[in-house]
Amino acid sequence: MIAAWFMDDGSKSYRTYYLNTQRFDSLSQKKLIQMLGEQYGIDGSLNRDKKYYRIRIKQDSAERFRKLICDYVISSMKYKLG
Image (cartoon, rainbow, N blue to C red; front, side, top):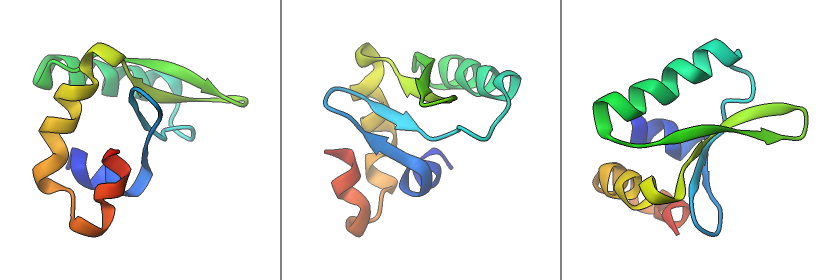
């Protein structure tokens, strides 16, 4: 599920990954960050993107996030992993 979400609405920056959740309300975003931490040990935070916020995977969790999803990312979307 997380890999499908990333393939659709995710991106990579220089050192980390983003899930574009700009249209989610802040409570929902915080719940998603909490779930990533509790279920997968991935730390995230909210990152301002213009006037909205999105989920940013913290740098110390970026490799864990990549390993979690890489086997499920289809070949034509592997470029998003960096």
